[in-house]
Length: 224
Image 1: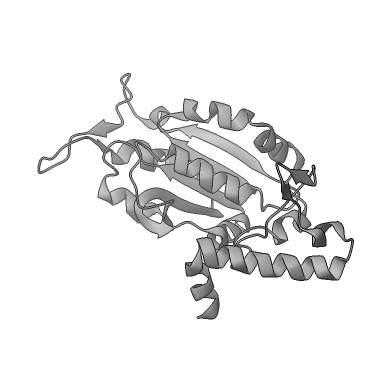
Image 2 (image 1 turned 135 degrees about the vertical axis):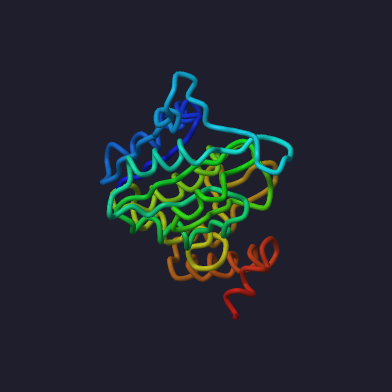
């Protein structure tokens, strides 16, 4: 799988690419990650990527030229193009699985007050990470990238993914490690019993309790 991220601020990805887990995933799996500077696709020495909106208004808008030129220069017949924008569909674990099956994913990061509306015509999907506004799409693109790339074959052990929150429609069960007692709080006896069947049953029950307490909306989705 290839993930290409189109941005006007590629330097924001420097630390992301150096993160041990990200770097290891790229080196050990069938995944390639490429950051593309959209300013490189603008004519003129000033590399101007924004302009004021027609009709007036506050802020600046990303111009068609840098975005579309960068996209056309880097997309292939196998590219699945997404735009990071608050107007889009909410990103979740199910969508991460969908993206992980793509041969090539291109993520376009917004900036300023948004995109020239004609740019949306070139996207297969518009994706949001939440109902809030950030200064750009770089952080959201990292979220989508990390959630997707860890599902690519070879990135992680499949057993590690199966029991995670949202994989089965509910939250993950509570986890404990040493010491078995800390400040009077003890690890549940069942986890120390060695009885695998009882442990599995306990984990299932506790996962349902946690979901009911913190994310009851997930249980409603499971029932529907």
